[in-house]
Length: 413
Image 1 (cartoon, one colour):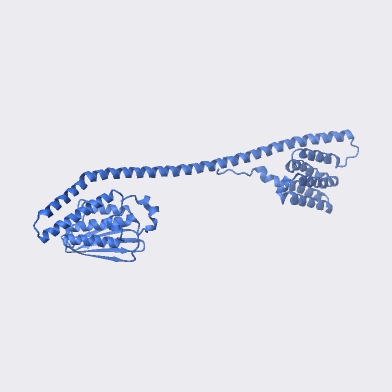
Image 2 (tube, helix red, strand yellow):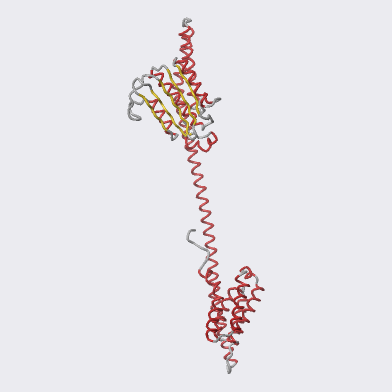
């Protein structure tokens, strides 16, 4: 608990009290009459207390050692009191010490011995035995009362320390439970999100199966029928074969996407090779001359980074085939220290650029931008009528080793 301490005011003050009870009467006694032996005895008393209690606090737990300490201290006090009555103050301090260092009944025996010293040590000629006994009993009563108060305060102090320790332990347990509950809640949220994503994937998979997949299957069937009845014209048969291949690949890719698998080109190849394979097939199907170059130090990247760049390359080439009427396309994949950059540039018709995500941007451009910005990347388009189009996607070069730690950050693409 913040702001709570185990050290009370009594704990801080009690170690200094014995020295004060010796120091104060010594100073005034020496100011009144300089006596070297008084100074020697006072120094011995202070050194004795320091050696037996101050230097070795653990000795307080040894009753025999503390009894010996108290007897020697009381003897020195008795001598000092016979020299000067000012040292009765030191005798009063011995009452406090008896309850501080002596255990149980020994404390009351120490009070009795101190009372006897206080009554008998100061020389008072003519005092009767009855007066001496009365003084002894009064000293015992007062000292015992003070001792009882001291013990009560000490017990309350110990109880307070125990309570503080218990509160600290309870606070620590509560903090641990809170942290554990937070972890459990995070796990539940993660599982709930995964369950929701899985459910949505299954729903979309059913929709794909009932719509796009069936349509692609029907297209493949029709192409196969057309292939069986068409005349043996090489150009027509090549086109039909290409259409069948693209339809089958699209169908397989749709199924893989909703099974949360990596795209087929990335299964057995690095990103550069996968993009080269995609560009080669696209070039064969469209007849557009396409070159792919890789610069920098190729290295495995986080799956989401590779999938995003591959999808951007596929979509960019698809857009060129649909709209650009280009004769040449250059694809460049650049590995840098902190980022990876994909550039796709064509020499086609180009178009007039408006604001980002405006009506001039079709669904393909918007989808590419969303994929890239989802990874905290940058997506740029450069185009002008008659000057071709350039698309640049820059994403962080997150290494493949951090896949496990980064999957939650990116989610599923």
